[in-house]
Image (cartoon, rainbow, N blue to C red; front, side, top):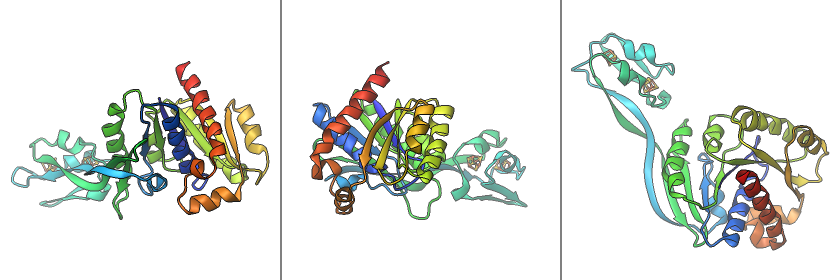
Length: 287
Ligand code: SF4
Ligand code: SF4
C-alpha cells in the first residue's frame, strides 16, 4: 500500500502526519514500513526519527555533451529543445545545464550523432533505518532549481523494493510538478489542511490536481481544528471527500515538534487516531 501525504500549502502539519503514519504502521505490522521523504528541498521528516543512514549516492539529470568534431552546427538540437537549454551560435554549441530537463530529444534529432549524455549532479539519495521504519530521502543540492529528477530517482530506487510494506510518501507542499511526481505512483493521497480560508483555498487546488487530474482517491486530515471555521468540512462534504481525522489545535503538539519529538512519542493517545486512518485507507485501497 502506497500512501502519499500532501498539502496545498506549507506548514499544515504534513510531515507530522507522514511520520505518525509510519510509526503507526510499524506498531501494527512486523513488516517494516518505508517512509520516503520526497520534500527534497526541505527533507525534514528524518529529524523526527533516529535514522542510521547506511547508503547514499549522487543523482541528477542526464544532460547533453556535444562532440564538436562531429557537430556541423545545423541547429536542430536547439530547435527541438522546448526548454531553451541548448543553443547554437555560429560555431559554438552552448548547453545550459540548469535549464535541461534531460528529455534526450536533442540527442535523438542530431543527424551527426554528436550528442552523448553525462550526468549533471543535482542532489543525493540517502537511505537508512531507525530499526522499526525504513527511511529514504532525496536532498536537492543548494542552488539547484529542479527537484523533480531527484524525486523520480528516489521513487525509482525504493518503490520497487518495498514489496508488500506500507509505504508513506512525504510530498512537498503545493500543487506543482514536484507534488505531481511525488504522489502520482501512490494508491491513496492524504491531504492535510487547516480550517482557515487559506487552508480551504489551497485544499481545493490540491484536490483539483490529485483527484480531478490524477484520479487518485483522497481523504482529508484537518489539522489545528478549532482555529478557524467549518468551511473546510462543508467543502469536503460537497466534494465527497472523507475527513479521516481532525487533530485539535494543541499547544503541546507545537512545543514537542519544535523539539523534534514525534507526535506519537509525546502524546501516545493519538496512536489510535492514526491506526484508524491506516485502517480506513487500507479498506479504500482494497476496494
Ligand atoms: S543537432 Fe547535432 S550537429 Fe546539429 S548543431 Fe546540434 S549537436 Fe551539432
Ligand atoms: S535533453 Fe532535452 S531539455 Fe536537455 S538540452 Fe536536450 S532537448 Fe533540451
